[in-house]
Image (tube, rainbow, N blue to C red; front, side, top):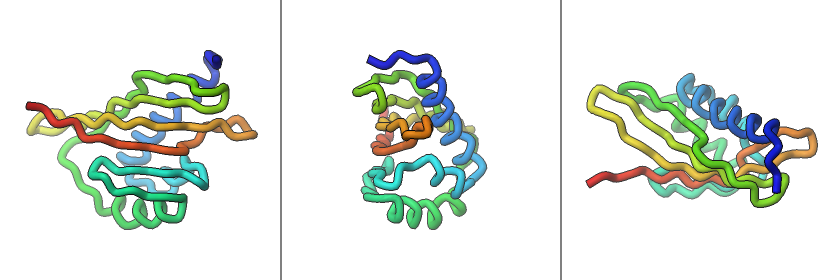
Length: 130
């Protein structure tokens, strides 16, 4: 299976870009990471099917989003399902004065003909402790 360091680095770069554009509330930068046929489920269970639905939701929510602190994203495990398809487990940590909270997204990414990796499916899950 694919263990090409360049692909792993490219996938990690997409995850880093998710972090950067979320922090900057950069709607278009975030949307540029998605495959046109993407499927996305938010941490609160909202299912968005297709780029248009993802774009409509993101344009409505991201600019108004507010959080006390910052968020970090880290690709903690990448498993290639095929040479051009990867399942990527992400550690999402919200750092705030009240303490850290976590999300645990799973991204399914596909490599395009031009070599770019795009988000094709995503499931974000809020981690509850206790």
